[in-house]
Image (cartoon, rainbow, N blue to C red; front, side, top):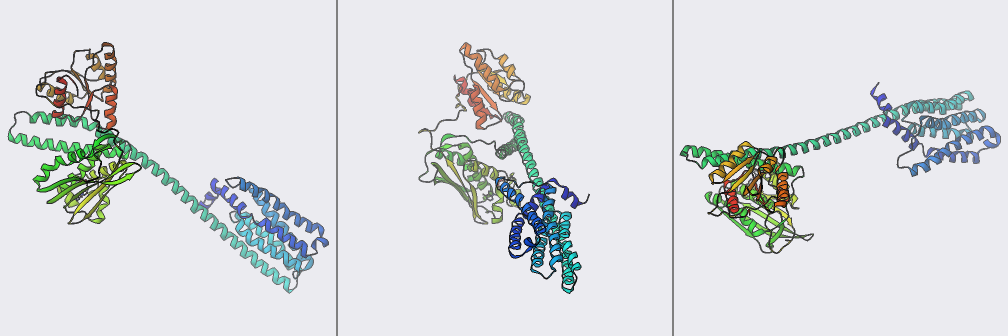
Length: 595
Ligand code: ADP
């Protein structure tokens, strides 16, 4: 089957062609009524030949009636009505046959040079022209239409004889040939445009399907990344913890140096993992912001203080300002605001060889009752060329390759900043001139605090006290390395412990007052830490005691922390476990409370 035939057989094209013919032939029958009226009013045809004229008039009116019905249907339906091919063909022949035969009849009776013949020939010619485009979608129909319309007239012109009639016969023959060629062309044009239209629609459908597939793939990728980086945090906990343990033993200077590098690399890897986790969560729409009261002054201090030593070592002047008008307390996600600020300040320090870095916060206004703050980090570094300024906010994109090679980095920092800032209802941008430094801006919206003074986060890590007493600790942890790490740390601090490899084992080891504390890993096989905690709390309800349970989790999101607290845990520490955090926690418990 040829391409053209395939298109003509395409169900959509078939319906469309039928509807097109019907739609185009809509005005024609109404025109016929006018011609009939003129014919009847200006010629003696009806008086002289009532049967032939009556049949012609009846045929014209017969075409009009279904059209009027269609006109009403058309208005009421959202979709154009469908026409069976026989209906279209009979409507066309109901015009061409009576007109051709009646024209031939008139020429035969009155000769070509009569008003009667002139009127009917004029009508036939205009029907031929309009019929060519109206029935263009259907080649056989349009050819049959032209031949039945014009051939009887042509034949009778020649039969009438005489110079004028013969010339008229020749002209009409030429016209018939022209109109046939014209109809064939219009038919080809029609189907070419249908083919182009169908191809376009098919392409659009393919693109839509490809887009859907890409969305699904991207979602799967984000979920995979989120899961993997979450999973990798657990062994990283082991690596970092063991390094801490080894570094705490007697080592030669050389060994200490090498292990120091290993610890530095492990920390970099962890930062990269955290960035990947954040970015993939943001991409899959799973990054949820916390809503707690916080002090903006404290936040600015916390964001800048860790960099003071580093800045001083490079001879950089690092200052921060909270401008007048910025409220002391706001409600939002201080951890995420700090994360963006820390990223920008750390980049500024990384890329600036000399000069100064200023971090400032100012009021930007109020939108829908929410405070909009404008944060700025300005440096006197190398600056960023204008053509690179947009790209640096894309994931894994870095500005100047030579600079990047010198300083390292993954190109994820600014992409995460952009994700976080947009979650906070703000935007991030940079103003920079090569050689004169850069100023990174971001805005964020915050609600008014719910209380006069901010509440603390649910997770609790108590300040350490020197006189900690030895504790009996139940460690629920499935990962062997992490078990070793935790138990070594506990043994070093003089505590006793028992280890359970999953939540169910932890529940069976727990029996009332035997332990002072449970360190409960959250994700474990057989029974997870949340379920085990719920069971212990339920059992405690009957005997009236309450053991402190501290969750150990690889995920640090507010949702995960909340799930821990909801299950009945008293606090959470996140992996990788820092020795200082654990010491503080245990000291707090040994004083008689978990936080
Ligand atoms: P990374 O720092 O890990 O490469 P970022 O997303 O934080 O990734 O930054 C992307 C790029 O933007 C950097 O590689 C650097 O080219 C450019 N950049 C960011 N901050 C600065 C700055 N303060 N001065 C000059 N260039 C910067």
